[in-house]
Image 1 (cartoon, protein in one colour):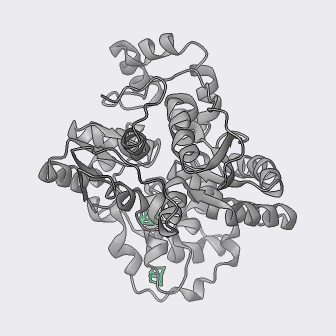
Image 2: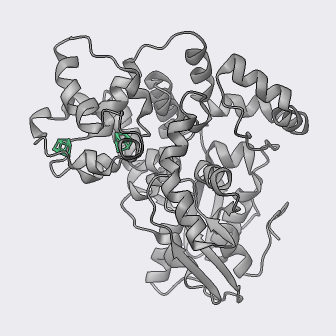
Image 3: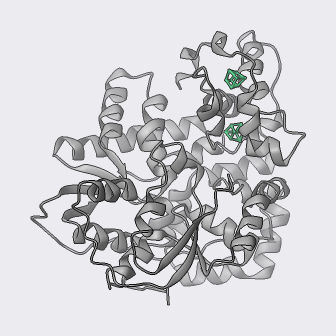
Length: 408
Ligand code: SF4
Ligand code: SF4
């Protein structure tokens, strides 16, 4: 990781990072980014003992990085310390699996119907709570066969795309891949699926820097080959997008050749809505939308904001006649991937999400739209309001339905 390059002298101790930290706002005992990042880093570099379980409470939202006026890469300092943080016993075992959603997904999607029955059974959830320290208050998302066959197209005038699906789409909602491809095909893109497994965000979030680096190295080789072949990369998951655009080069900074390839991939990676909005700005977006009379609320995931591309889904959906959409603008949902599943982290996760839950209750939408799978889980869990990926609404506005569509 690049944390050694970050000049700690850049820290002005202004506390701007603390003012935007969702964990600190909801859980005042949390020491905050200034302390866990630059302040403790000085001691860590002196070799002084300052390991802390609080490192595990950082949500990796990058809001502190965005707020810092002096370019201290605060969350990266915390992630690097988290990767060296000592864990023991069952929490270490649980987090090993949480760091590897592709391995878990491959196993759990062999017989998905059986998996889903077992994961939903009260006794299994009670057992997971007791043995694995996974909260029994949440339900795991259903697993499905990872069938990512996309509709075949050739000769699209807008160019070739490689869709990087990520683990949530591949193992839990594979029908979304075809929906993404249908929307892209409609706008002139030829799309194929290519990746080398998980992007590495779950590994980093669970303090497994070695696994995160391995994931980055594997994906960089695969995706840089696609870029050399003239394709652009597109993601529909903001965490994958954040990793491809910003995370991989940092993880691979110890190897100049790999870092160079990662920067090439980053320059050629687009969020799905970012790409469609750029078509819209060029007057090239297919806007033959059918009217959809709906009241929606939009939640912007942290890893969407950290990409610095604004809220392209919010602006795209506003173009569909009949849709009334409100930007919830309520900060982090508190789920942070697997964080909210951990028994000891569940109260902190829900405390962070409360502001968003209150905004949903106040807005009273038919549905919430947000592009992050775990934000959707948290919103449904905290509010009871259905949350879906915005591409589903766009596809319906085009008068098309994906295979296996569950949206009525
Ligand atoms: S990444 Fe987010 S949760 Fe972690 S310290 Fe920074 S602002 Fe707080
Ligand atoms: S890390 Fe940045 S925002 Fe935080 S106290 Fe230091 S200078 Fe201020």
